[in-house]
Amino acid sequence: MKGSNSMLTKNLDTRNVATVFSSSRALAQGNVALNGSNTGPDSVSEDSNFRRMRGKPLMMLLALMLSWTFIESRSRAQGTIENGALATGTIATVGAIDNWNFPAKAGNTMIVRVGQTGADTAFSPSLRLLGPGGVQLASTFGAVAAEVVVRATNSGIFTIRVSDGSNGAKQTGSYRLTLALTGDPVVVSPGDEGGPLTSGVMHLGEISTGDMDVWTVNANTGDSIIVRAGEIKAGSLLNPGIRIFGPNGAQLDTSSGPASSEVEIRAVESGVFLVVVGDGNNGIVGTGGYRLTLAAIRGSIAVSPGDEGGPMIKGVTHGGEISTGDLDVWYFSACAGEVITLQLDKTGGGTLLPWMRLYGRDGAQINTLANATTVRITTRSIPASGTYVIVIGDGNNGIGGTGSYRLTGDGQYGLYAGMKVCPVKSGVTLGLDGAGGVAGSYLCRDSDLRPDLATGEMETDLHEHLLNICGNHRPQPSQFRHAPPVFPSHPEMIRVA
Image 1 (cartoon, helix red, strand yellow):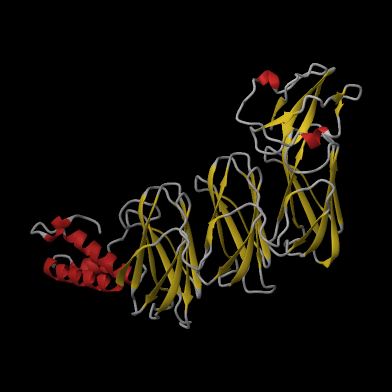
Image 2: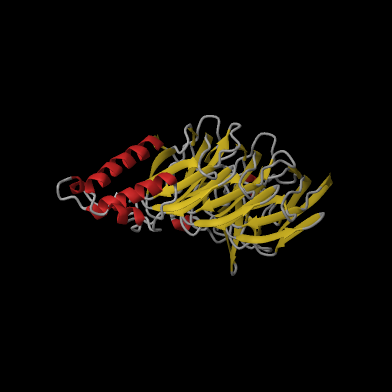
C-alpha cells in the first residue's frame, strides 16, 4: 500500500486513498499492473474512479475500508513453503487467493510450480510471485499446471499467490505447490524424492502434476558433473526434464526429452549444485516415474544393488546393462605416460548404442566415443598418475536406448583400481610414484624388490607387493623417490597421488 497511516487522520491525502482503492480493486480481480523490479511500490495509474470521487473523502474512506475487507476475505495466509517440500492447498471459494511465503537472498534462483489435483478439471491454477517490496515479479496460469522462474535481485521475504486463472476466475479446486530455491537447504517431504545425489547410484523418483524433485550435488572447481534422467515406464506421459544450477544461483544447463535427458557441466566454483527434475512437456502436465543417475568425476563412487560400475579388476571382463536414464560409472588407476586401451562392446539385442567417456584425475574429459557395436579408446600417454573414470551410457539421439554391454581394458602395468606403483624415469635414474587409493596416503616397498635397470621398468611383482598402507609416519620428500641402485635397507615410503 502506498503512503502511511497518516492517510486516515484529518490530514487525509485523497489522491493516495483513491490510488489504494483502485489498486485494491484491481488486485482482487487479478489484473493490477505492477512494475518488474524486486523493490518499489505498485505502479497504478489514476482512473475514472478517482476522478468521480475527487472531493468526496468520506465516500472514498468507506470504499477503501470495504475494499480492504474484500481483499482480506479472499487472500488467505497459508504459511511458509520450504525448498523442495510439497505443499497442498484448496481454493475453496470463488475469488480466493492463497499466500505462501519464503525467504531468499539476492542471486538465488527460485522456481515455483503449481498443478491441479483431484477432479476439479475446470480449475486453472494461477501463480503470482511477489518480491520483498510487494512488487509482482512474475505471473502465469495454465489449464492444469503453471510455473514461474525468477532470479532474485534483492534479499527478503517473497510471496507466492495461488488462485484460479480460468476465464472470470470463478472456479474452485485443490492444488499441489513446489518451490525449488538455490542456495538453500533442501527439505524432502515424507514419501517424496530429492536430497543428496551419490555418484554411480541409481535414484528413483515419481513426478506428479505440480511436482518437482530437488536434488543436490557437492562438487569442487574442475569437477565434471553428468546427470541423466529417464522414464521408468516406456511411453509414459512424463517427459523427463533436468535443470542444474551453480552455487551462485546461475542456471548452467537444462534438457528435456520424450524418454530421457541429460545435463553435463564442468564446475567453475566449489559448493552445492542444485538439480531440479520435473516434467518437460508443453503445459508441464506429464506424470510418471523416473530413474536418475549422477556421474561426478573426482568424487567417491558407489554402485546400487543389482547395478554395475565401480572399481575395475585386473584380468576381469566387466558386463553391464543400460536402462533408460542409467549411467554406469567405472574407475581405474593409471601411471603417467602409461598406454591404456579400453574397449566397450554391445552384447545381445536391444537398442543400446554404446557410448564411452573417459575422464582424467583433474576432472577433464580426455575422450568420448560412441558406435553402433564396438567402441575402442586408446590413450598413448596418460597425462598424470592417479584415478581415471569411465562413464558408460546410451549414445542414441534422445539417449533412450537400452541393452547390455561388455567392458575390457589393458595397460602397461595392468588395468585395475586401487593402489598402484608407477615408475618415474629421469635420464638414467628411476624413481617411484604412487597412484590410486587414498590421496595423501603412503605405500611401503620391501627392500629386496629391485627395478630392471637395463629396461628402466619395474619388476612385474612389484605391483603385487605394494598393497599395504604405511602407518602415520610421514617421510621427508627425499624419501618419496630414490634413484637406483641406491635403495635404502628399510622399507621405502611412496606417496599416493
